[in-house]
Length: 308
Image 1 (spheres, rainbow, N blue to C red):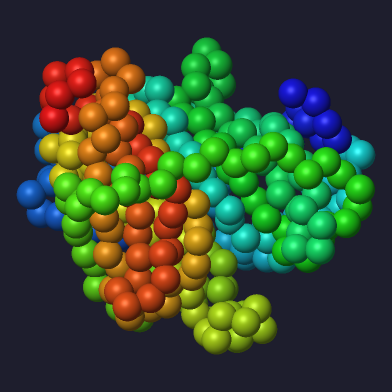
Image 2 (image 1 turned 90 degrees about the vertical axis):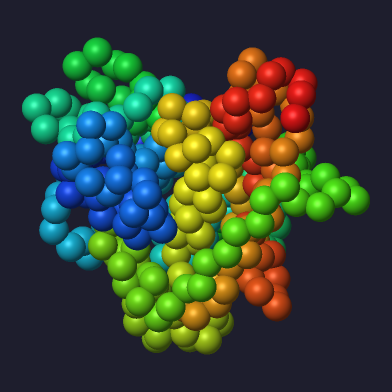
């Protein structure tokens, strides 16, 4: 893979967490009282929910509230323009889980190591920057999770860069009812709770930024919906066992407002990679648009290979 900026490595970021962070995260994404292994630190099977690493680049190495805008300092990627980090939105996120996280990072040094996979000029709409972020134990360089992110820098294109490859799509199966449907009635407090994990973007608390960006007010974190859906899939297909979760991705298709009802629809495909079955899914706002598209997960469902 080649192109402007490809292979550029961002400054290494130290990250940390404690058991309380894991408890808060599980609570904020909808884990329930019959999943005490995510919600009670003395449970003999206490575990960090497997998508928790997605929050660590926001949270960093602190337990304090973060000035979100001050933290979003632009890092110049060689051979591409300097982009405005206040005008960037999530395009898509893929998380691959290799090792379960310890309940706390205390006594160990964890780092997020991020490199550029591609920078693509989409013309007038903007620029896409694809990155790979590995959560690494610095003592032995073991990778625990890998997150591949597509970030879209709005109206920051037309600089002469490559257009990029065609995206791979994972649409829901045609003419087949979903195997599982689950819902979530959000409230005005939904983003106010989720932001305590470390994502303190004012867009999810103060109406003014959302009005300026054309959203009409506060919107819920895209990663809230992303993590909520991940929990539902693991709960319904993998028995809420974090060991049954391997890979998960979704594209952020449209915003969700506090008070919207989210409806997730998921399909078993019967396609397996070893013991991991591919699940397709989408999340839509009740009576409105699709919020998460291109949803795909690899989950150990317990079915024999090739059989449902």
